[in-house]
Amino acid sequence: MEGQGVPAALNYGLDQISGVSTNSFSIVSSSAGDEVSSGGRFTFLLPSVGIMDMKTSKVTFSLKLVGNGSRLPKYTTSLIDQIIIRAGGVTISQSQSGLFGAWRCIEEETGQVKTNEVSGHREVAGTMDYTGGILSANSAETYHTGIGATSNLFEIDLGEISQCHPRLLDLSILPQISVEIVLANNTVLAAPKNSTLNKGQANNACVVNDAGLGVWSMLRPKLQANMYSLMSGAYENALRSRMEQTGFLQICFPNTVAFSQQFTGSARFSIAAMSLDKLTTVFRQRKHATAGGLVPLLGYASHTAATPTMNSIGGCGEANGGIARWQQKSQQFMLPTILPDPDAAGTGVVNGVGLDSAGVTAISYSNASITAPVTMQYSIQSALVPQYPCDQADLMALTCWANDIDTLPDCRSYAEFFFNKCIFAYPLSLPKSEKDNRCSISGLSTIGSNAFITVNAAGGNLNVNDFDALTFASTTAVLRVGAGRSIELLQ
Image (tube, rainbow, N blue to C red; front, side, top):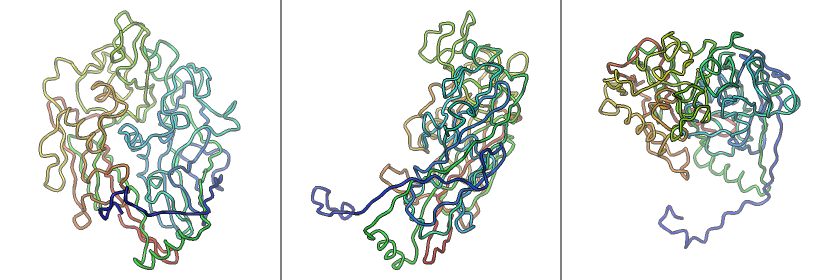
């Protein structure tokens, strides 16, 4: 009634659904078995009746790592290569092969999703694993012994379909839904020489272990399906009435299309979409898939050196002071610059290893030799967005605008932004509040034009040799469901 101009204080309406019951089911994949190796795939079949909560239903599992020094990356979603959702054999949601983990990492860093602090493995383990075990140079961060031998410890959600509207899907009106999960290969692991010594000092956590990359596998994957049922029949009657009036029901969910190419100063792609909501670009070193140690998050750790060079923001700079935090190489999104210089051995910023020196010259973005800014700008067909080349403050402000946030939720300095979490995003749709549903479509339509989009960068400090540009086009897809479980996908 508020939409009709009647304030809530005068609203006598009463919404009542009786006979609500809940249950949770454990669904085992017939194709997975007890252990799925890296690069493998398996499928879950959802129930054909009942109302499923797509947001809270999770895939749970434990993990097995083999190899000296093998460490898991931040976020359990980084272990996933692709999630494919099919209805009646028709693909309705599919992440780009190989880039699902990168996109979810961007969503985490911009506050769009937030996995569980514990079961989502949100931090790289240093001296202790997630069950309290001590990690050393000769040990792998594995969870196939102890409590992990019999219990699942980690989880992921169902990908972008978990953000659908309505959140509760009546599976009886849809064809059989399957969820296929493809695991990433072994390059998502890190292989530090040692993470127990001196919190990120040279020659341990940031240096590659002589044993190289280990191998990993997923243990006992199962789908926890959270379900509702209603006894009153009012909901089923409402769905039937709506379908008779309009001919179909609509389910809206995000659909992200990813593009990866060598960065030479610009990167170009084309897309036709009903609602193009946002553009996001990050730059990743080409050597990210080689074996390497951990990449430090700048501004969190001090060293045993007489003059500490990686102090915590606001810290005292005491030797051994500060909290060390890391990421895996494939999660390092950098500002594509030539300076700061790599260290003297050539194994610092540019080579893909990350940082294996405590030298300040390898990581200082206040280097006096940096005199020209790196600027970025999108073009859609011939239109420039924004209208001017963006410098560093603009990158931060536009990225926050595009994601409807006041600040990046886990970034404390420009050093960390430039070296670890550089994200360039631009909005193409209206902002949504928490009360808005995804059916409010307002993005740019490029259906009839197959628009060519380019991300351009310029500046005297621009590196055009060592990076790949990963660009993600966020769109809204609509699944229309008709009588007889018929479906039509609009995107």
